Structure formats: C-alpha cells, structure tokens
Image (cartoon, rainbow, N blue to C red; front, side, top):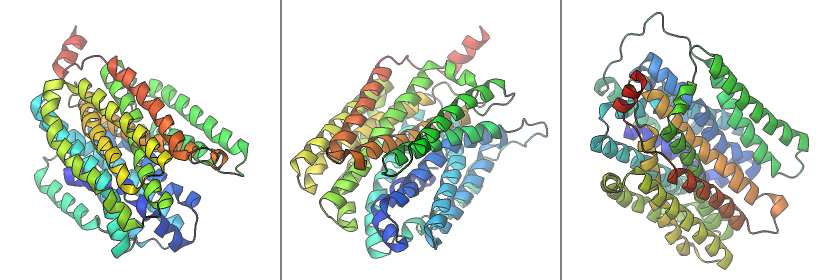
Length: 451
C-alpha cells in the first residue's frame, strides 16, 4: 500500500522541475503548462469521494486493482504522449486512477490496525511515505530530466505499479461477494464534486492572465458555486449519496479535513516557491534544483521516525498545531530570503521547517480525520481526507501562486504576496485546530447512536 502511495505522491510533484523541458519540447509557454500540474490534483481530488464510495460498495481489493491499473496505464500514456493535449489527458486519467486506488488502500490500512498506538504508527508510516514521495518528486524530476529526459518521470513508475498489482492479488484479503441488490452509485454527485473545484481553479488561474475576458472568470467561479450548492442538494435527496451528509455530524472529522485543506495549500505553495526561486530567479538547472531540495527529503525521514513517538505523548491536536507553526515559520523565511535575494543554500532552513510542518501536521490530521470509522464508512472517511489534502493543495497553489505571480501584480514581490496569502490560511487553520473537539472512538459513536 505504501509503495502505491509513494509513486502516486511522486506524480503529484515530479512534473514541476520538468515543466521547462516539457514546454520546450512541445513549444508552449508556462500558462499552457499549468494544467499539467493542476489538472492532476483537481481531478484526483474531485473524484476521490467516488473512489471511497466504490471501495465501500464493491470491495477494497477490487477497487484497488482497478484504480492501480488505470494509474499505471495513464503513466505509460503520459510518458509516450506525442502532444501536450494527450499529456494533459493522461494526467487527468492519472488523477482518476489515484482517486479510485488511494481510498481503498488507506481503508485497508485503517481496518487492518485497531485504533490506538498501532493505527497511529501505521498511519505515520503512510503519511511519511506520502510526504517523502511528494518531496522526492522534485529530486527525482531534476535527476531524471537531466539524464534521461522528462518522459521517464512518468515511465519509471510503470514497473513498480505492476509490483503493487501482483502484491495486492496475493497479500490483500479477498472481498466479500457483491450482492445483486447493491445500491447504485451517485454519479450525479460525483460529477458535481469534480466540476466544483475544477471550475474554481480554472477561474482563479485565468484571472491572473492578461487578456482573459472578465465574463469567463466570473462564469467559471459562478459555475463552481452553483455546482457546490447543487451537490449538497443532490446528496440530501439521494438514497445512496456519494457523501452522506451525516458524515458532517462528526465535528472532529470535519475540522480535521478543513485544517488539512488549509495546511496542504500552504505546503503545496511552498514546493512551487522553492522551484521558482531556484530555477527562475537564481537560474539553477533541473539537476541542481532537484539536489538542492534533497535536505527537505532527508529531514522528512527524520520526522517520520520522530512523530509517531510524539503522537502518543502529545496527542494529535498538539502535533497539528506544531505542524502549522513550523509551516508558518517556513513561509516567513521564504519571504525574507526572497527580499534579500539570497542564494539557494539560504532556502535550506525553510525546507527543514516545511519538513517539520508536513511531518507533524499531516500525520496528526490523518489520524483525526479517520477517528471513529467503521467497516461501513472507512472508505468514505479515507476518501474525504485524501480529497481535502489534494483539493487543498491544488486550491492553495491556484490562489497563492496564481494571485502572487499574476502579471497584474508585477510591481509587488510575488514571493511575499504568495507567502502572505498562505499565512492567512495557516492562521485560520490554527484557530480551527485549537477549537477542535477530541476525537471519539468507533465504540463511543455506536453507543451514542444506540442511545
């Protein structure tokens, strides 16, 4: 499960350093390349709830095999794509494969380990692998792009996907037979849940581009709002909703997912800020930029060993607050370094702070987001948590980087604007986390429902 998580996480960030090479190959500018990054995250995040529901209805192993196969096939297509349009389509399919496979994988882990120390350690490993995959995506991107070409950043995952498929067949417990009277899928809700963030991201990204008609931006944003409102109404009336509204009665899970979106937005923004500063401002090549980010990957390994021990002592909420604090300090460091026009090595302290923020914050939030799950809703809870992570990251990049680096604000330091916007989200997340109620166990929830 963690191997699958690693390569899916790598594919979230591996294209960033390779973007200039992809653009040069296809003869397109940076604006056209935006959807190579954002499209994957938004499509994957928007469809994660469908993947979680499929896992609960059809069985975790079946859905895991289906999603992993789709992800591997899309990776092969991305590596062989002859045009930018086909590359974007392949990235959208990769996001769909991730959305189907990851909730099943996480639900398998959650139900394999009981609540308490064993589950916290298992989720710590899961989160650490995901964090390392996100960061190593930058490092691998630089090395692979410099020596093998950008196409291999996608092709390299294909043999490992095959290993995951074989391992899942032999190691994951077989699913129960699917009954003929299984409830139908809420495809209407899935479409609306995907359209809402997609339209919002499109509106924000296009708003920063000169020459984009105002009605296009306003229409996209209005469409996003309409899709969100319609989604709530559809879920309230559906006999088999994609996301049962009773899920939101658990205040701990709701708060944890909201904080996940805000923290992930800041973390994803920091990744692109590191890349832009090293390559665009300092002129460092792909290999040098990737190697400069190696301390971030190495420090994540350290925090992945440290956080599981502290999670039991401090509690999940304290770890979350610590992660938010570390991330906020990293944003301040990025703004200061940019203002001083310092060299690439000056970014290392900020990278270490980001590693601490990821290590403490995301592990604690993952634990809180699946508190009190049962066999019936483990897939939904896992899907919501992953969707919050991905959509939060994509939205954070669209808002912080999209607004910060908009041509209309060229008179301001884009790094300062982006970090200030991220800081607003982090402060909001800290307030929500501070007021978050303590998690309830599955036994407590069942007792409460019985009462």
